[in-house]
Length: 434
Image (cartoon, rainbow, N blue to C red):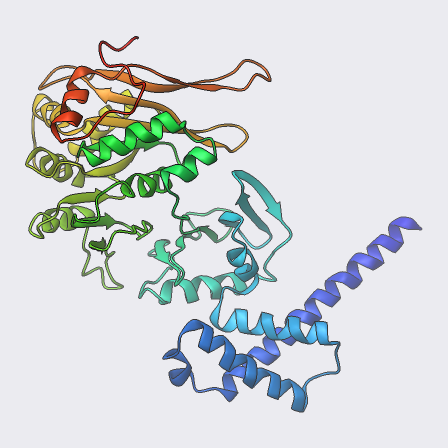
């Protein structure tokens, strides 16, 4: 009897959801009949929502079903979310505790909240609804997604980065990954979150101010862009900074910032502007600093050459699991350039360009932190060598880990002092302990 009752209840719930979705579809169609799309398209998003809410409220007052004020408010919000927002995903995008939204087909929606991935009850009513949302996202950036072009990257008006992949590549249905625009933290904020100690923040601040080239390394979701943004906060307001990204995520506070963003090919496959094109062009723009959001290919060689030809103090990030891996990764990426250079020449470029590597990690609890700060000590065509300036020592069992500040190589100390900066109090200079 209990099983039958539960089955009846589940069937009733499905009919109720289906009825609500039918209402949404009905009044979305009525709303489109009542408005001038060209006129609404010229308004800001907030103005669009306010205008549509007034129109839909009038329609419901004249011909809508009898419903509670709560249900009426839900219907209005849902219809407008479908019209100008992201439909069922809109509440998730509005939740600032969520850093990533992952849609794996019609029924499986996951989010990353405070570093942890969790399933949420949000779901689409049909694959058609999911495809409608995908079309709305990609058409806003003049892209398309279909079987001939089943992968696409886009950006939402709020700055969130979107990746879409559909069948036949995605075997379980259309997949959407939405990454929220990272909140701009300062180094002081990262200290407060225990991502690094105050002594390390002071040291990094001096290294940035003294124009050392710094590479931020880490895995996916380790916080590279957030950390890069925090480091950039130590750059003088008197400098001209050029940022280059695939999808603009950095949020610098200095007054003289030029933001450049790559452009994918259009529907006809034309008009692509790659990261390396922007790096090359930035050299003609009189930059004091060049910040590349992430190096992923042949642009690495252009970035290294810029660092080696007077553009000191540049910052960038790379996917790698350790400081040594980061240098090897740069070597591999630089070899992807159409300019064929011997390995020894590329190694000479890397050893001459990169001064310091900040390695980030994300532990099992979702906490992000600096695991090591290392100075590159190899020179010219030598095998890569680094010296740790700081490292995080993991605790045993339930014991809390700790940061360990090590010695600063004399070459780095002299360079800081040559630029007129003092080293943080208490820092030891000399041979670095292994």
